[in-house]
Image (cartoon, rainbow, N blue to C red):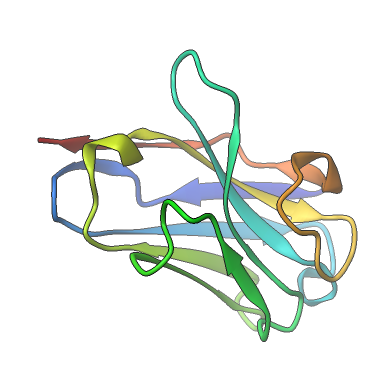
Length: 124
């Protein structure tokens, strides 16, 4: 059984930083691409960042490019999202997901397992 558990969310002032973690179990972690998505009230879930199985390829949504960094440690079965220069519009529930292939891109349908989400709130 695949399990993904996010942590690291919280309340931070605009301009601050947070680091999210996603601990995975139940699957050969290093074989699959991973992604971060977020969802705000009344909005659809949106892509944030993706990383390939070997960690060498990444891609970001334009809204977070230059501020967020996705990474992974395959020895620890954990993925991270370092978020800097946070803005109020970054407020959302953040979800990690594991893809169906070694690089799954930005489409949520390419991901088959999801975590429960962690709340990030950025105050102005």
